[in-house]
Image (cartoon, rainbow, N blue to C red; front, top):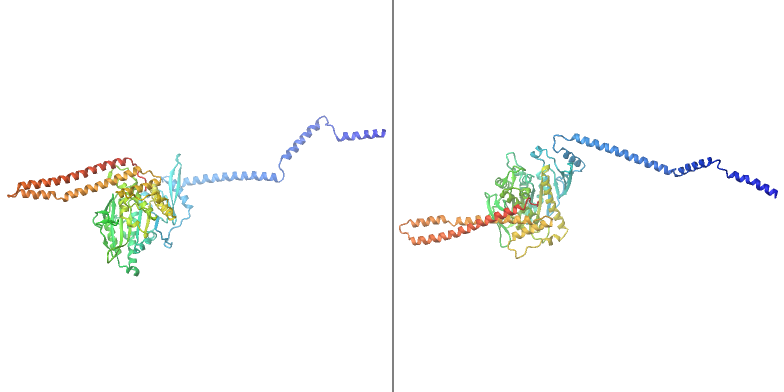
Length: 595
């Protein structure tokens, strides 16, 4: 037991040694501090985690440095751009913006080696260079033809805070011609592929469309010289005539025994005038076979290009034109030049090529003038362009109704829109100046709409066909019905057209009342009342005059004359009424919607 006690006593101190006392609390504080340090070390990343954190910090610092450098470079670039802007140039900032945009484009142009794709309807665009007036006003060129079938419109705009910016509008057509393109190259891709059509008993039509001063007359008829005379040798008229005579000389066409004639007329204010017959007024009628005939239109036999040029120069000298802010030699009418092939033996029509220089489209969208003549001129142009668009739509759709009676332009060109052998080309002419940007966009949207409709119809969609019904058999006034169909298409394009329809109808009624008045007056004049009165007076002065017979015949003459006068007064009253209705209708139209 003692040994056991001794052993237990000896063992106790060893246990107390392993469990050391806190030593007055100093070791407890030191131990807590040690535990805190160890805890912090445990929380600190070690190894890969520390390296990852270091990499993230470095990345953030690198991004921050790059951002600061980028901002510095941008500030420097802005400062350089501001230094490049000419303080005397009113549009210098827009010019730099457009220059930067163009510098990033890969520009390609059409060449004579590029292939020509045969199409039923071709829509292309041609840009003219800046003219002297635009250069003098320091206008910016807002058009860039960057590809063979593509162009951009750089529309200058300003925000609410007056910050300037450029909105880019891309357009795609069959062909796009830049400002340095010659007429010969434009002809190769537009009118030249249509020439062979008329030798195959077809109808070909080529339109030049655009704003006044955009180059339509230059493209179709040739450039103007310094004394305002037109050199027609390089226009599409002359180039087409040269190809007609070249193809006519081929053996396969010589066997057809054809002769070539030309006609040239203009459509102004809803009336048709012969430019090869001293501007004689023509009548448009439909025969029993529903074929449109231009009564009295002169056809000149032509055997060479010089004969054609003579006809063109003769017509251009008397064509209706005027001076506008856009052009000192502005065409105010639609000019239609036709090359006609007929059988020599029977004089039967074989083929026809119609080349049309349309009036400026901006005239058809402006009714702000208080002058009725200018207002009616704009209304007729607007109506004809609307009808033309719908006829081209119908040309691309088999079986669709052709609203050709809606305007005189489409009425005289009816045979150009009918048949599987009909082919059409539209050349949209655009001005590059900044002040013409709105009209340029309207022109391109019109042409783009035509091309869009053609593309959709090729796919075989029948939706548009169902949307435009055939005119009912009970309708007596086919012209009014076609006009309503044209305005129905405006509603499909989300354009409010009720007031426009009423205005167009009022103008049409006014033109009809005017023609009826003039015709009634002509009948009164042709009745020869003055000569018949002189004859009666001569009989009364004779010695053996039967005064009773004289009085009876005078009474009959006066009754007939009174009847004519009453009819003439009624026509004058009707014309006055139509004047009032046109005036009222025009007050509801501030600006005609662009076709």
